[in-house]
Image (cartoon, rainbow over all chains, first blue to last red; front, side, top):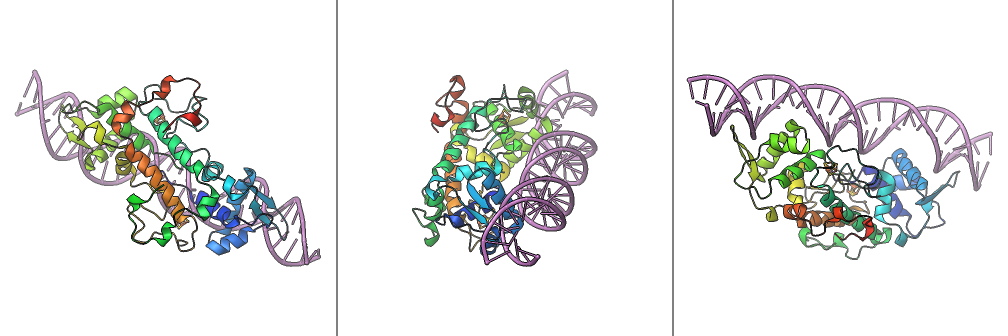
Length: 155
Length: 155
DNA sequence: TCGATTGGGCACCAATCTGGTGCTAATTGA
DNA sequence: TCAATTAGCACCAGATTGGTGCCCAATCGA
Ligand code: SF4
Ligand code: SF4
């Protein structure tokens, strides 16, 4: 449906919350209470992020999670890829290229395969350009602009 | 999951098939047999496209569908919007702007809402830039390039 | 006129995905 | 020890998706 999952949104929220707090392990409880997010689900997401080496985790009473790298080096693309796999617009393709022939049986005659891949490349690139830092400190603070025409907002 | 539905893919395939055949009504059967697509499902998709005034339909023995406008004027964005609604990255937003407060209850405290909207705007814009014509006659015929690095392909 | 071919409408289904929860074990600091 | 935390895994209910069945309405050609 061309929409990010809640998991990904929760993951992004959590990561944004941890920006500029390296060394300080933030617990899933703190995040979940701050943003009213289901704690158990958030924990599941953070676990996945830890598996993909985007955050460090520490157990125990004062445990929690913290960013492995600075916010400038973590991209939205990485987060999406970690939480819902490499994005693909069509069923036949993966980001890693179209190796290992997809599962769609009309691939040979499909006239939209390669164009769709080009579009997806663009989307992907855009997500890789967007870092955690730019999430927390956007160049334009659109939220502070009222009555802004969505069509006029720059990327 | 950030992926187009099969319906949308089928719709795009059908539309591409009808490019440069205005006045000639193409039947759903012809398209379905050409690309090995479930006929009934394709018919359902074409019906939706007709409802959104992207194709004309004609009943009867020699009936079928044909493009309403030339291929240069129909964008992928339109097709996607017709078949799966205006794209939204997050659950709270719609393309028509964020009026009519979304259903997500953590909107006020959500730190990623506006950045996500910016990304979605970019995606949307890209789809609106891509016309049916550019699908059938891409500027770069990537399919003919072997061993091409996906990261180097331009949008 | 009549049959064949086409799209339109509507309901319906099975598989999958998604959001979310329960429970238990392992780890850690006070 | 105790409380707090992450890790692992199974499990569930609802939504979405891909796909089909069935009958009606329109149209053309014989
Ligand atoms: S081959 Fe064509 S129809 Fe099949 S998944 Fe790829 S883009 Fe979609
Ligand atoms: S408010 Fe934030 S968490 Fe809720 S749907 Fe919008 S972007 Fe997602």
